[in-house]
Length: 303
Image 1 (cartoon, rainbow, N blue to C red):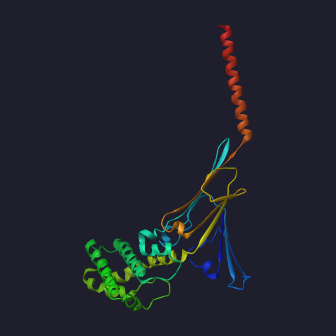
Image 2: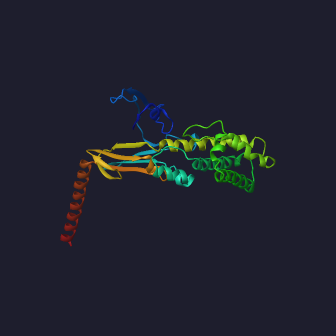
Image 3: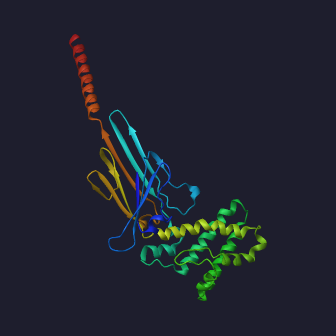
């Protein structure tokens, strides 16, 4: 299998869709000048021989990274060898996690981040961070719901008063077009619940939110990416969901839009038939049938 990532320096080296670069992958990078006089074009290539299932990014790497496992199977028999390919770009469930962001990503060309969307992202990260801490801290469900409703109320009131920009701008971590955790806002609005929470809970909650804020940033960063997947399978194609075929190559062309919510699945299968073995089997079967008929004929003649 071979990966190729091509674009400007940020496109190739950012972490929204990292290509494998460690053993057994052979990883190379190059840079060429843009003939139109623009930014240099960076290219990263990585290739390896695969068999069976390859995960690329285990669950321990957190929820943010784009997962795209692949399964390559080969099954041999006396008369044929079959090959199967299955690759899945895991759906990012944007509509389920942040509906406002989903609407913007599907319908708008702007990369700007609306403050209402930012509140939605922060609420999701807070909810998931608190959920992940349940194994470490035993917080009552009612207390957790009260805290989440309190934050919703804070954001709603700020929106009503036209002060959403003010409450987010109070954070020293604001970055243009990037979601960040407004730590001072989080700490301030946890204070009414200090007596109900264990020591260090708030700081641990902020840490637990970090993977989910990264997930949202990767989702936004992926939104303008496009992909091409090519596959050559030996023998006759039994089935595939390829977009097109060129000679013996199957092609899929898609974008992040295709897996913003649900999985994008690539599948194909082929069969190589061993004609000589099949012919031998046919001849052998014919001889067996002929022998049986001869024996039956002789038996009838004797009777």
